[in-house]
Figure (cartoon, one colour):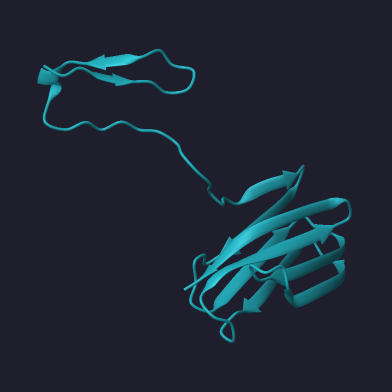
Length: 123
């Protein structure tokens, strides 16, 4: 007879008896995710498609003024830099990674005193 003990953060133990069934479905959250995020009061950043084979789009909403976007490889080398002066409320920027090998890249966005970094996966 085997009893399964499950514990999630902040919850008490859950005991499941052996006659519970042949399988168990237990929902949990683990790891990282990259949603469309509300960075500050009215600023949104969306990167898509991610992963992609070559083209990525960065959509910035609610940004105004100067925005700098830097694309880095895993070695920390800057591959592309885009500087937008007097950005409007909505900006869509295209990044073409077709000249680069498959792997992980990072997009760093600087706007005023806010810096955000997003991971891009090139297939």
